[in-house]
Every structure is written in C-alpha cells, then in structure tokens.
Image 1: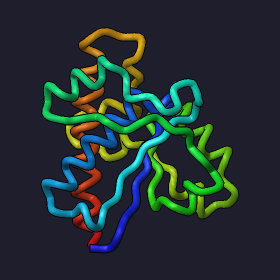
Image 2: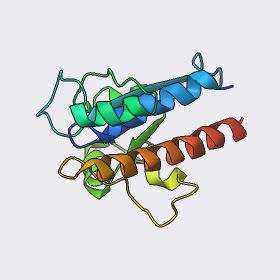
Image 3: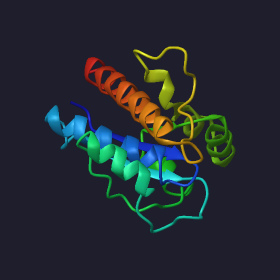
Length: 160
C-alpha cells in the first residue's frame, strides 16, 4: 500500500481532531497498516498548545477503548501542507481557515471535510464541536468520527 499521511484539524485540537487521530490510529493498527498510514492532528487556535485532549473527550473515548494521548499543537502551513497528503477538517470554520493558509491549488486540494467519509450518518455535513455540550454531544461526535474513520480507511484501502 502507498504511504499516506493524514492530518485531522479542529478548533483547539482538544476534542474532535485528537479523537479522530486516536480512533484512526487504532483502526489503522487493527488493519495492520501502521507502517503505511501515518496520523497526526492539529488545531487552528493556539489556546491549548501542549495540553492533552479535553478530559471529557478522553473519558468518553476511553469507554470505547481509545487512549487519547496527543498533545495539542497549532496547524503550521509552512510544514503541514508539505508533510501531509490529506488534511481533514471538522467544520466550515476549520475549512475556511486552512484553505486561506494554502499557498496554491495543490495545497487546497488536500483539504477535505472528515464528514465526507461518513457511511451511516449521511445527514451530517460536519463533525460538530461537543465542547459546550453534555455527554450526549461527546458520544455523538465519537459515533460520527468512528463512522467517518471506517469510511476513510475503506476508501484508502480500496484506492490501492
């Protein structure tokens, strides 16, 4: 399989993108593809740089068997466009922010919505931010991310 590098993006890199990062890494590991599919995540805001994911997201993810240990970092347009083949954003704000930092059409083509890979939740066009919501918001977001990561992995494998 061709080597693929994926970067997940959300607002502060403490809820959605580290969850996608951890879930996709687990799916890739289970598929035996850790040597060819590389995962990272970043945020568009600098508020949480160096911090672990939100404790609520970590707890809900742990209930599903995922350890979210990524430390938040800021998206870097000078290196991330070069280092990643696919940059997956969670919502319109993320998309607009990253697209505006692209230097050319080739970089813009790498930016996609994670929700494009949803298989069982076609009514969603974005992965909503659970930060200001309750437990049900975190569970929904994890459901959506698991669904989209399955779809993404299937797409990557079938493209080979």
